[in-house]
Image 1: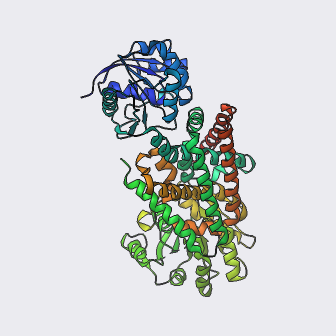
Image 2: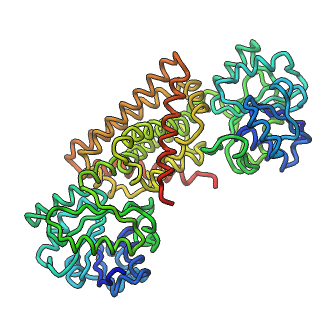
Image 3: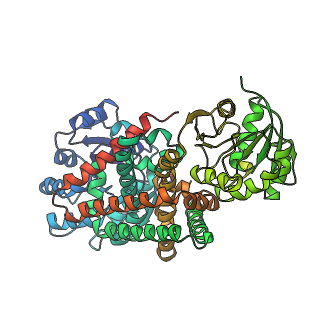
Amino acid sequence: MADSYRIGIIGVGLIGGSIARAARLQGVATEIIGFDSCSKNLLEALRLGVVDRIAESASAAAEQADLVVIAVPVGVTQTLFESLKPIWSDQVLYTDAGSTKLDVLAAARRCFGRVPENFVPGHPVAGAESSGVGAASDSLFVNKRVILTPHPDNDDAAVKKISAFWSALGGRVSLMDAAHHDAVLAATSHLPHVLAFALVHLLGCKDDQQEIFQYAAGGFRDFTRIASSDPRMWADICLANRDFILPLIEDLSRELREVSEIIKLDDNPEHLLHYFSDARKARQRFLDQLIT
Amino acid sequence: MADSYRIGIIGVGLIGGSIARAARLQGVATEIIGFDSCSKNLLEALRLGVVDRIAESASAAAEQADLVVIAVPVGVTQTLFESLKPIWSDQVLYTDAGSTKLDVLAAARRCFGRVPENFVPGHPVAGAESSGVGAASDSLFVNKRVILTPHPDNDDAAVKKISAFWSALGGRVSLMDAAHHDAVLAATSHLPHVLAFALVHLLGCKDDQQEIFQYAAGGFRDFTRIASSDPRMWADICLANRDFILPLIEDLSRELREVSEIIKLDDNPEHLLHYFSDARKARQRFLDQLIT
């Protein structure tokens, strides 16, 4: 049974709001205090009952809590650490929900000189193309991977408690090295988002000239769904994790050149068939291990 | 009210089978005779009641019908035309469901010397990643675009009748020039499929080394769904429509280089935000005109 906390949630959007809703549903929150830099979103969080109270600043929300969840775009993590530094407490647990982890650790080091032992970096691998507290759901993390990336200075008890907290929200918690996390997520999440944005950007320009979208079907809708994700969040992620993302864009470009060559040469129609068949098998391997 | 036909369906897979089911449901089939080069699939079509009878060859199925629907991978269209040539009849209507149209017209010209006036090329813009007659559905074409690409030699009455037939199956019929069709579909369908296959091919190789798929989430599942499509059908389409697809792969590669440059330079974080925001707006424009 997980402990119950007075939770301070900084960034009450889709993820922060869903953490609040799930924590309340699962009985691991005695009280939830929220802060969000967007006051409209913050007030909506209060109106919807996602948070019990709102605070006037991130540090005010954190100061009243014994568990602080940082759920802001990764690009503002360091600024947030700076604002929490004066009230950072040994008696409080801290975790975050950022999609990249090396840069969050680096931000902590820049701010505190070292990563605090009571800060346990985390990433719930769950989301939706909608954003804001209105899209928050108490079941967003059920059966979803939650990756924690503990660091050498971490207090073991803190890691265990944060792990139990995410498990209580329904997540399937894994521990992983931060660099490995960033490499894996660059491949399975960040690269697909870049691709989807790039494709839709390209076709958007073509649509201006010849109205191609009206003949696109369900496959296109699914393929491009992630291009409706929050642009700021994804710009942040791509800049934060550029060291892993840029080589992958290179790899993918090489892969596209290979397909082009196969199509161009056309000396053996079986080549393209084999290439596509291998890809289909790889996707089946992914489906076979998908948690449903 | 559409006419009712004795329908010969050549290729009783997902598309041919769905045409059969929808035609029966809508009362536009007096009898359905099927042929498929895969005898297992053909026998299943009979067992499932998708067709009333099966024929021992494509020409035998066509010979007994007054409306012939060709629903085979576009790569075998010319061979099929050759086999139908001896029994081709002025009294019969012919249409097809191929995803590319210029090459189907070219195949007809190579076989007949000209495109027969009673052959009306068509393309139902509908599908699924599953294939075979077992996946056929009588509602596959409901509210889906069906593009007919009449040619100069077409008999107007034939075009009207084929148009009425597809409308009866639930489709929203548009007429379009074959080259325009191929250009539009290359962008909204063929390019996304190539991209999905290429991405999954790349990540499949990486997964062999470090098991990345287990941390992929719902966004990845949707993004790669079309990479589970029939590899042979898609190899055929890419080779048939290479003249439009290859330049688009080039365009997309250029687009990826642009994104890479923006991420690399990082002189202004707003650049990437603007790029992603533009893409998101383009997708919203697509969603706004999607038929639901």
